Length: 232
Image (tube, rainbow, N blue to C red; front, side, top):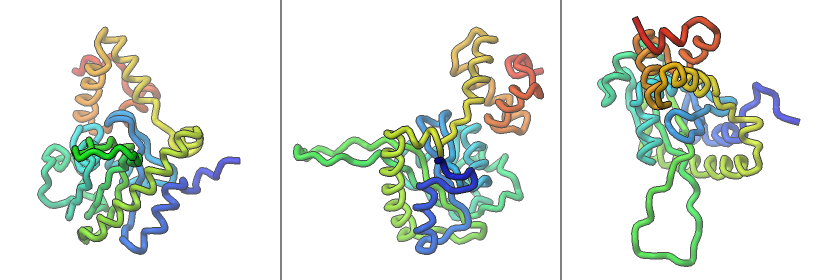
């Protein structure tokens, strides 16, 4: 029998064990195949999840940097000057999160007896673990190190549960709305999936929505595919 919807996933329960050692007000675990195919695990903080959606829409931000580079990203104050100007320009003034640490969930390293002296290639990320504080209270290097160790354990659990099928069946509910609307738009335009996604990003930005919010609006009939394809 599956857990109740309000219960956190095993990965989020693991995070709870480290909360006192690191200290955070909010946490989210996001699994991702790429920047456009991602899902927050059950029990994740909705505010941080929404901030991830905003970054996905704009293709910039600390979560995307940590995911693509495979290294932690720390933001001392989200309301201060940031290296992501577009994201900073549209971040809500009342966003309650101030300090943030983002750690990639790296594919666990495999042990091998054939060890070479050459540097190992960077491991791909399965997603990110994000911890947020509602006050300006920057995460220290020691706290980020603890988060990195936690992320390694969380990643191992993710790999195991993905292999059994439990992860997708119970805790990772990928939002298929974006893929569905992207396919509809690509067919309408006679264009590639990439071009359709670019049109969706442009429409989402100008309408003050995230990509996922726009996809849901299209499927609900609130926004016409024609309007996304050919904005007025």
